[in-house]
Each structure stands twice: as structure tokens, then as C-alpha cells.
Image (cartoon, rainbow, N blue to C red):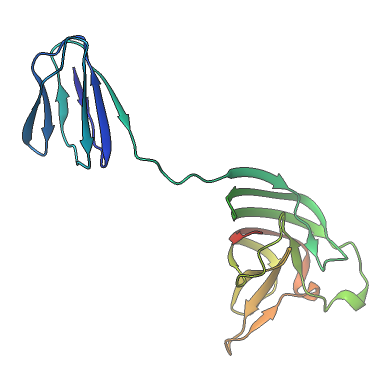
Length: 203
């Protein structure tokens, strides 16, 4: 029986009914293994780079235990993101958000299709556009910038991106002078689409 193994920093425990002619091929060098008895165990411990085959005559069950690794908590979920000025939100045909959390690190994907605004009041046209987040950011750390993978129905100057602020995403455009400007309700059309990916730390 030939078993291909590539492993670094390992413990190999060989339990075999037959203990004749066992060889471990390590980087083209051969190391012979002698069993203690017919049903004995042979332990090899160390940090080795094993390239090649384990060759045995008979039966061999090989168990490899990796060294302890750092564990982390994982969870995932979905939510319905809203787009608007924080008070007046757009009607949406589709609004989906999916996130994964690794300990306190969250990755988020958002996709929204809006059809029209919920208000035609001219007084809100200069309000900044925001998108709600599923979980607030850790404000003790700097702001987090995300990427817009798809966009339709917004007017912007040069480049466009998103920036976290507590429990919302601000949408902003980069001006020719290097400054940033928030996208406002007046910069959006009655219908449009946006796809966003962003990662940030939570509390």
C-alpha cells in the first residue's frame, strides 16, 4: 500500500498487523522503522518535511496529528440593507446582504436594486446617501473602505467608493483635486443598482 503524504511539523503513529519491511522515504533518504511487536506502535515525532510514499508489506493505518492551531469563532448571516439618507429610504426591488464573522472580523457583500425614492421632497436632495450595516464597526479603529463592484444610477466625478461610519456606509466620490465628496440624493437616479464588498472589525 502506497500513501502520498506531504506534511510539516507532524506526529506519525503507525499501527500495523504486520511489521516487516517498513520504510519512510524522506526527501530521497530512507529511514527504516522497526516495530516493537506484531501489534506494536511506532511513534515518530519531530518537524520533518515528508515527500514521497510510505511503503509497507501488509496493513498499515497511519494517523497524523497536526500541532495545535489557534482557534476562532465563526458565524454567518444575512440581512436586508437599506439605502437612503438614514430617514428617507428608497423603495427596493431587491436588497440582500450576506456576511461572515471570524472572531471580530466581518466580511460583507451587499446588492441592492432600487426603483424610486420614498420621498420627492426637494429639501432632502442635498442629504448624503448611506447604506445600513448589519453590525456596527469598532469605532476605536480607523474607518474601513470598501469596493463597489457594480453601479448603475449614480452620478459621480472620478472614482467612487464606500466608507464605514459606526453602523452605516457612506458613499463618496473622489474629486479631481484629491478631496472626497459624499454622494447625495440629488446624485442618484430614480432607479439603479449597487454591489458592494467590504470588511471591517466589530466590537
